[in-house]
Structure formats: C-alpha cells, structure tokens
Image (cartoon, rainbow, N blue to C red; front, side, top):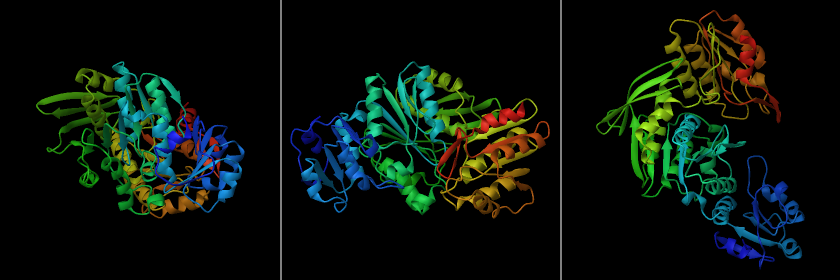
Length: 487
C-alpha cells in the first residue's frame, strides 16, 4: 500500500520529508524489525521509548517515521535522508489506525469477542475456543497462554498484543477462513490503545478485584481502563456482564450495546444455580428465559461455572445450537495451569495461576470444599516489579484459609526475592507458615511433608514455564516439578 494512502487513515499534525509514491509493505514499532519499505511508528513503552531509536530505523531503511515527540530528531535529518516524518498527537492511536487501514479493517470481517476482567479471561476464552472446535467451526484465539489460528498454535508474548500485531493476527485468521475470533483484553492494552478501533461483536466482563495498581495507581483508574472496552461498543454489539460483581453497573454505565447479564442473582438473564464440584469437574444448572440446561465441565470450582456461563452466552448469541454448546463444554480440555490437578491418588496437587488476592482466596476455598477436613498446604509467592499492595493481603488469605503455608519466590524480576517475601509475611498473623525461597525446594518440601489424602495448592505461576530473575528467564514449570516429587 502506498504511503499517501496510508496517511489518510490517521490524524496528522505535520508532514515533512519525502512522502510521494512510497510503497509500504510493513508497519513496525520495534526498530530491530525495520527493513526496506517499512514504516516505523515510535511509541513509548514501559522501559524504552521508540523515539530514541528513530535514527536506527532510518539507517535500516524505513521509508517513513510516525512520531508524537517532535523534539527528538531534527527535521533536517528526515529531509536529508529522503524519509517522511509524520507528526501525530498520539503514536499509539496512529499505530492502531494505520494497522486497521493496512489490513483492511479485519475486525469488521470476523465476529470478534473481547474478554476483560481481573480473573477468568483465559479460561473463558479457552472454553469458547473449545466449543467452536467441537462444533467444527474454525476460530481464532489471542490470549495469555497462546495464540491460535484454527488449530495452528503461535507463541504468545503479551495477554493482548500491540495493535499492529492484533490486526495482523485477525487478518491471518480471515485468510485461513476463521469465522470467529476470541481475545483476552487486558487493562494495560485498553489504557495503551492497543485495541483502539477494533469492532467487537461481543464483550465479556468477568469480574474486577484488586490488581495492577503498580501501573494504574488507583482502583478507580483500573476500573476505568476496563470500562473502555464497553464504552466503545456499538448498538449492534453485546455486553455480557457478570451482574454478581458489585462494579458491573459502573462498567456498563455508558455502554450503548445490548446488555446481557449472568450470575446467581434472580435478576440475571442467564441464571446460575445448584453448583457442585469435585476433583472430576463441575456441574450446575443454567436457566435462560423458560429453559433450564444442565451443564457439566471437567474444570473445577464455582468460579468456573461463571466462566462456562460467559462462554455459553457468547456461543449462544453467535447462533450455535445449545446441544453443541453443552457438549462442547462437557469435553473441554484442561486449561494449562488453571486449577490443574497433577497429583497422585494419595496426595492431590493443584497448580493454579491465582496471583491476585481474589483468585487465591477462591482457589483455596474451592479446594477446601473438595477435601473437607484433610490438610491443605498452600505454596505461593508474589511477582517482583508488580503491585506491592496485594502481597500482605495474599499472605493473610493464604494463612487464614490453609492449614500450612510455604512462602516462596515467584518471578522476582529485578526485586530482591527476600524483600518480596518480607512484604507477604507482613500480612500473616498465624504461626502456620514457613519460608523457603527456592521454589523447587518449597514444592518438594510441601509434597514430601504432606500426609496422605492432603492437598497442595501451588499458586501464582500456573502455565508459565519460567522464572524471571534479573531480566533472565530460567526454565521452570510448577507442574513438572510437582510430578517429579510425586514420582
């Protein structure tokens, strides 16, 4: 596509340098990926600012540079190198607009579902994909664990990729004849305009609890970031809301879409009741209008009845037969690291991604309901360079709801693991905890010291197969380590 045509998709403040008849074959925001016939969009990231790499991009053959900081590189550089300089108000919005135009607005050619919330995004998206797979309807998935185009799996680096990557993925899905696409939508991505301009047919709100205050600073800012998804829906879209969450009304306050609610309160459009679960799975009743459906799924916990209901609603509104949806839920595959049972007959080990106070509490309560008075040991830590306020809260929850707690290291990143553990321990008032910083040693100790018929919850990392320590990712899998010491 020619640069002159691409420019029409964005709101330009100033253009300088050579613009005419430039053919653009690639849009990039990472200067390392720049090649001839590409356009470089300088965006400010968490740790680095793309504006500092404009010269690198020009040296690698960028035909044009989009920027929102006009003071970094003199205009004469662009003119001398015959490179177009395009000044905009917001580079991130420009990246989204460019990508939408470059890939021919792919989100309007596919039925797109966005799922946001503190907990449940991954499981809900996974269940939707499983239902479509069972119904033999080709679909795509973009999320924390992996991205899928039909059955083809791609690595996932971010819960929600940058806007150019999202539009590219959607374009590939359409090329591969996918009819539907489901994506997890993080609060970071909404605030940073990664999903700007996407046309969502369905948007799901799972819940909102304390998280990501290292980035958003206040809970209100966090909630308002989630709200962006629903503020942007049009009148032909559907907002699918967990009405049991006390903040659901605020989320949809300015939403123009059709509102569909689910939950255990009688006012919900899709009413959940009679939830029962054990280590084999979960069963519950789901009532809509005058029909009541019996739902069964291999995932464990009351919280998964909510995730399954959200998935049911999306597929129901998308036109799938109810029988297909029910059967698709029944045979859904285990979500890696989401209340995943890896134990043997005598000791049950559960690996779960729960890394927020709410998700940890729900995981422990669910496990307690299953094992009754048998011993429950929780092994967990908290990530470094993330919201510190939740650390003592999680320590308190783990200690009060478990028989024993082993506090260990998670992904310390650039923080001192001992300092993170100290923050956790500040919230513990009971004398039922120990500290073992080495995560493998902590898991080993929990398993080997556990009585028969006891349960060990290993929380925090779930599907992750690494530990992030001072910028280096070392291979580490909670489930593999657990299996090793279970024999």
